[in-house]
Image (tube, rainbow, N blue to C red; front, side, top):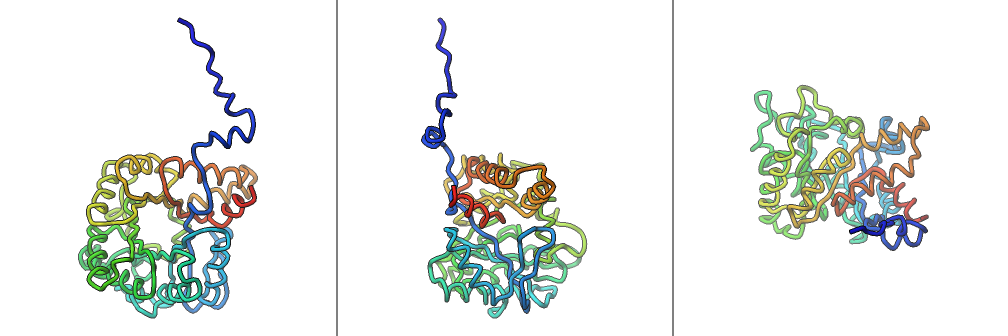
Length: 326
């Protein structure tokens, strides 16, 4: 029996037909925009390794959030750079810390017009540059849990909508959920960096946030990029501990894990398109090797196609402008 030639190209013959059959859509509503705010900074400071990304003084936060909101982006992720660091990362859970001040300012000026998310980690705040408390030259997981829970609580008091633990400490979601619930913040959600891999794609971020470890590395607490089953166990652990949104980080080299997470779990799935992914595109575009707009959209569409419900991306503002114009 012979079959007629199946001409799939019929569904590609015009722009309007292609739009009708488009399986994956991308809008500014899919983005979470990272924002760096630095204590005691007077003017914006460019991040050399991340073109067009800046650290903001507190006085500029309102204008920046206004720009982000006007682009139709529904959420921001706050990262803080303190003026003083110590071994305990005490400024991270100071109710008058830089992140807490930024949260309060955004809430005061924007109400519920934008979702305020904040990173919950210690690497920017500790003198060691590690994501947990160091005892006897190694991370003390359980001591770190109490500190992470205190950070989340201080952010909740300031008015955060979603806390986002990224330290990769065992039990961090459970510890934070208990602390928030015990203190009456049952409506504050948790978006965990559930499978945060020990990645070389983080290098520009460490420049942006001044959080490179002063000794050793993070191999003892971040997921090896060789182990997909281990990554899924991390996600499952967070689900069992009561997380609201799970995240795969980085995104582009981990599309298989985004897809597997989407297949296995019914919770919302976030993906973090990290600093190295951004910097590589910017560098290649500057040299004329790629068309930045085209490759940026291809990357973001691929992350969404893999199963991400939302994407944390440094391209958020540029991509939102481009999508609004198209």
